[in-house]
Amino acid sequence: MISRPWSRHGDESGVGRPSFVAEFGLWDDRQVAAAEQVEVALDEVDLVRVVFCDPHGLARSKTVPAHVFRTVLRNGMDFSAGPFLFDTGHAVAVDFLADSGVGVGELLGAGDFVLVPDPRTFQVLPGTGTRTAWVLGNEYLRDGSPHPLASRDVLRRVCAEYARHDLAPVIGLEVEWYLTRLMGGPPGNAGNGFGLQGPAPAVEAVNPGYQFNLDAYYDSVAEVADPMAAMLMALGLPLRTIEHESGPGQLETTFGPMLALDAADAMLLFRTQVKRFCGRRGFHASFMTLPRLDSFDPSGWHLHQSVTSTKTNVNVFAPDGGAQDTISPEGEAYVEGLLSHAREFCLLSVPTVNGYRRMDPRFTLSPTSVDWRFEDRSAMVRVLSGDSSTHVENRIGEPCANPYLAIAAQLHAGLEGLVAGPPATGAEPPALPGSLREALDAFRASGAAEDLLGTPLKTCLTKLKESEASRFDAWCAAERPAADQVTEWEHREYFGVF
Image (cartoon, rainbow, N blue to C red):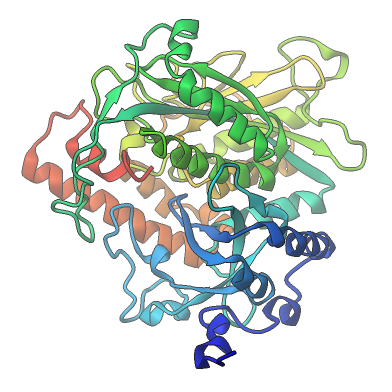
């Protein structure tokens, strides 16, 4: 057998650093046990997609052969800092050639960070052909400390704060999105570049829409939706319902209650795999709030929330006696926390120019003010009450939001309300931000956002969103579009990638 010079060291290229996980003690006992199971499962896998969530909520990945992943599992994998530097249109928004102003020295020169797989998230993807697995990772600096720009770590910290109060947050996902049929044509590269998005995918609607929950309209998407449901269940996701919403080909997908970090992981996996599944069948799935397509209706992401006592395993929102239209004092305090930070945290639930199209009085079931009511879908926070399943539904979010940041912001605000005690009453509810620019101003001025995210991530997000908003403003100044219509800029920017 000929010894090839690259065979001895090739597996080390870009593969973290030897024993990185053990050196810095990055796994708990559950992860150690899960890693042993992963190593066995790798015998039945060809490729592994190693994934992390960027600030925009998009999955970024590298694909490696299974034998390489055996090393990556405990050494980590080197990743470029590029996803932290680009806005939604891949314009460079954070300077990496000089002082970025973010406070993370490792960004200079776009230096690598280390992504460490979380073995508990390892999934073999369903399907035939090349056997591929997916695993989420946590971002670290080379000294073993959590990366200050890692959004998954924000939610991990918030969950740890709940644990210190003997509490566990529980999340249910209710997501609206669009299924359209791809029409072929060019790939959209014409005119594309850094900060210049080419044409969006050419699509057609799959049905006329505006027959809510009509079985015949669901049947018109069943050739995709039914096998997709089987795929989601094969991934272990707690699928509850798929239904046809209002718009042409608009679907709503709901999932059973999960612990908060599991719910955020599930949201990222769900969106990514739905786009993959539909694209391979000649369809396009988009989680953009309001595409620039005839008669399309806005999509929302409704986040269901409750809190369980880890001492008693009781839902702390449940009222005594089980009366309708009641919630416990703890639950009301949690809601007050959501309301008190709604404007300054809005950017984390509605992070795009397009998302604010939905928050308009024309769309009667979309929130426009900071308020709450029992069983009222027109309120920002709808309380579903009366028994042990009492919970709150925040209806503010857009489906493409970063799940870790959106959920972390809700939980952080709610916990502050719980700790603060009985809610304030009687104040006139303020309006929610009406644009990305307005939300960015509220976020920029927020001390609570800095407490939640840390200075580096808050500064980075501000730069990313300022770049996005400024590019949109410049386009509008040149093109002068109608103020009440979705622009071509938005459709190019969001419809394909989200």
